[in-house]
Length: 117
Image 1: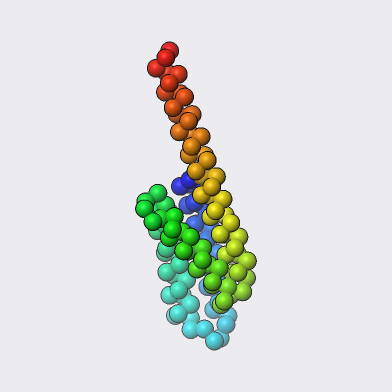
Image 2: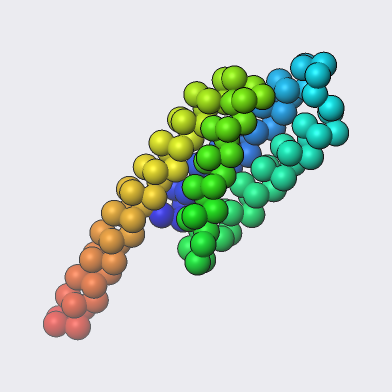
C-alpha cells in the first residue's frame, strides 16, 4: 500500500507545482500567496509519503485530496485533476491493501511449507 500511495502523492507534488505556474498567470493573485499555498501543499504531499502507515496518515491524504479539488476554485482544471487524483488515492489504498494481504498470505504459506519440509 505504501508504494502505491507514495507514487500518487509524488504525482500530486508535480501537479500542484504546475497548477502554481498556471495560477501565476492570473494578475488578481499575489505571487507570494500562490507559492505559499502551493509550497505547503507540495511539502505535505512529500511528507505524507513517509506518514502513510502512521496513525492519521491516510486521513491527511484524504484531506490533501479535498484541498486539490477545492483548488479548482482558483485554477478550474484542478476540479478535474483533483478528482482524478482522488480516484487514484482511493485505488492506491484499496488495491494496496489487497496486495499487502496477498503478500502476507504468501509469506505465511512459504513459512508453513518451510517448517513442514
